[in-house]
Length: 248
Image (tube, rainbow, N blue to C red):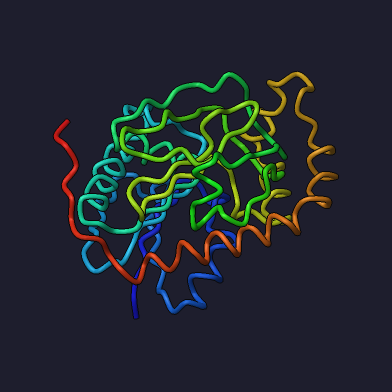
């Protein structure tokens, strides 16, 4: 049975809708929970690909979260080996960092449902080709990434120019959350740290408004999630020829 490696940072940021798709495709999922074991030193040996999930930390908090350096090094190694890599939110920012791009505070915090628009390249990309010109997608982030050299800019929003990119044909970084379902969103809204983050917006972000919008947009998000992740999973079947990253 083929194996997929998943980096997790907090218990409430999980694979979500991606989990059953991977299992139905016959993959065995190995989680490395850096929140529980920050000293973990996983190996990529024997794995067909890597998924890096979200979390509340940022990529420059390496003194507080030493596993960030471990993750960046392993992402670089996975890319060097030609393995498919998918990053979601923090995971996307870690991929950008591994590729030498800057990650910094976004002009605005995005929490809730926001319109995300694919770029011209995004509309032609195999993963995002089913996106309409604007889709309501769930977000929860305060940082954003620059597009790495050699990567293709795939999506944007009014509040965050860089929402997604592809590097080569098998490395994808999504700032947004396609993997959430209604239960996950409700859980996130009740996490104490998340509630404090919302409170800091001084009423700009309304949890009840998010709940109401979730009822409207969650079915379409699930449809997009299935289409996008199913297309990405195809990349786990074939690895590219190795292209070492430039020295840093």
